[in-house]
Length: 206
Image (tube, rainbow, N blue to C red; front, top):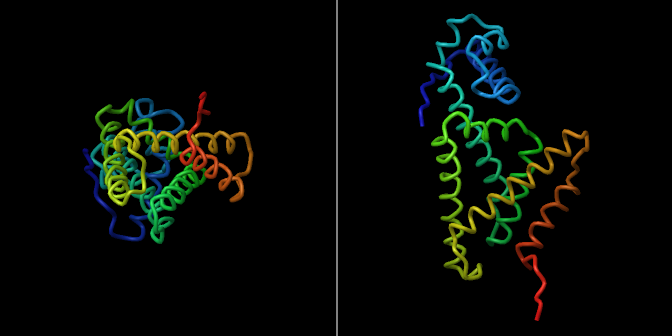
């Protein structure tokens, strides 16, 4: 993935760099990648034109940096929540909870990540395949430890990613409707997910 950017080395540079990132996040989220120009980012960040190019080669390198930064932050947030988990069941619950919590705290992340589908489909595919590969590795270990039923691990990884993604949307929509999400609410949603994972959905007919 293209990522031609240069990190700042001074306090002033860090401040300017963050202004560019913040402006780009807002504009990419509100207007989309294709409708956001570098000039508009420069205007929104209130910086000189040349300053942008001190840190980024072009708009795509800025976007891919933001996307990769979100990927890293989500991983770190989940790792912090799951580092002391002893079983896959416990890890799954706390990992899903952490992901949904991140979505609620920073809903712009969804816009940025899904925008990659319209920027370059290969970026979108790479983003989710990378997440899936890490998920699969963890599930394979759980399978070896006899913690899972007999099921295709790759498909399971995408099922679990899908559940997390769309319950994350559920809490984002509630936030947009000015509904506050308490920790009790968050536990309720996660408990519903775990109930599904533990028991399935359909009642037996015979």
